[in-house]
Image (cartoon, rainbow, N blue to C red; front, side, top):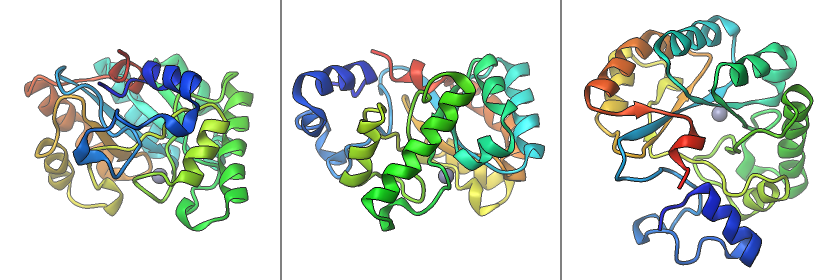
Length: 230
Ligand SMILES: [Zn+2]
């Protein structure tokens, strides 16, 4: 059974959030209850971005996405939205998904439940102020996978399961453009959720080649909403 958002929400409504994952997660991925990929039978992938950093890189990346008709998903850090409030409406207007990536991008595994709650709720409030809703998805900061505490708070604020990824571009390490491209192309599969970051020059430099390589291999980049729909 695929971990679609619709199924997740349906299961949450029927069984309660705590019972969501039993029986749904393949054995190899039992360590995580997060969503780390979509259907393996369709050649769609999701480029997902940590949303923070200087507009110098976000602006030209959004222009590349617009000119190539590419739809992506951006997980905004709340403080980034405060510093650049116009970006939220622009991301939505240009057809991308916008999600919650906590208020201050702290290491979420090491903070108290109260602080976890505040990190998620404050970013949700910022999104609601700017786009009228709390955003499509939630990804925790400082960890690839959520904890029970993080999941409980995410569900409390309406996000269902947390979004992880199965392909790490490692762009945040500022490697060569070639490395970023090979980190993705050597690991991408049908349904992959690819982790990338706004705010790093290499991400911008790699994007045109990365997009053309993905298309050459038959992959279509789509939003998480499209990737995870039933
Ligand atoms: Zn991040």
